[in-house]
Amino acid sequence: NAGVTQTPKFRVLKTGQSMTLLCAQDMNHEYMYWYRQDPGMGLRLIHYSVGEGTTAKGEVPDGYNVSRLKKQNFLLGLESAAPSQTSVYFCASSTRRLADSYNEQFFGPGTRLTVL
Amino acid sequence: KQEVTQIPAALSVPEGENLVLNCSFTDSAIYNLQWFRQDPGKGLTSLLLIQSSQREQTSGRLNASLDKSSGRSTLYIAASQPGDSATYLCAVVHMDSSYKLIFGSGTRLLVRP
Image (cartoon, rainbow over all chains, first blue to last red; front, side, top):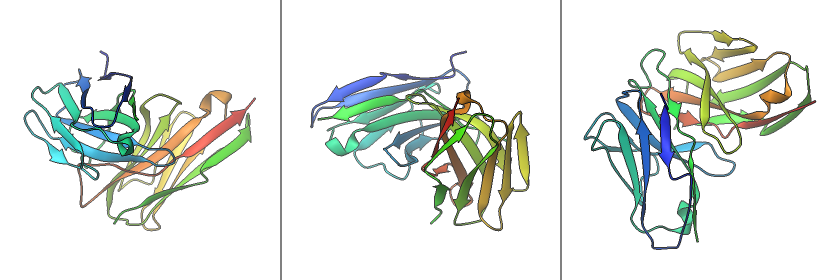
């Protein structure tokens, strides 16, 4: 049981390049999330999914796209990377809505992305 | 708009000391509050989750309290150890957005041997 895994761990891009970050979970969770964490700030929600085939925008969705074709995978895409997207990206998953009783979020180890 | 604040941003204490980390939020309409630990270069690990109807939760040397009416939560760490050194984040689930956590910026804790 690996929990939540993220690929790759590190990546350096040039401005304008594209890439996809992969998140996988083996806990059969319905909900999955992508966050970014910038220095001195907490995590901010980019996009989330409430089940296979669904996606929705979070707080800071601009410049990112997501897909949830399989329940266990949640992909985050950058079509044309910008220096402002330099950040650490975290994926998370949960069984149900966060508002439900005793429902925790489980996080992956993060992907450190630098855009030059 | 719900905002979560953690003060201080950094804290350094000698080993063995009991300590309190603070978290405040601007809107008391929350479902729950969660404390996380983040080690350098790692993801977040959930420590304690307090439902809005609860006052506190305990796990080992950790005790988290919640005072929803005043918009405050504290994380108490007893008999601190160097292994407790990490960044501690609190986050709330606000009632107008049950799908997301709203995070504070964290308190970076250093426990000196």
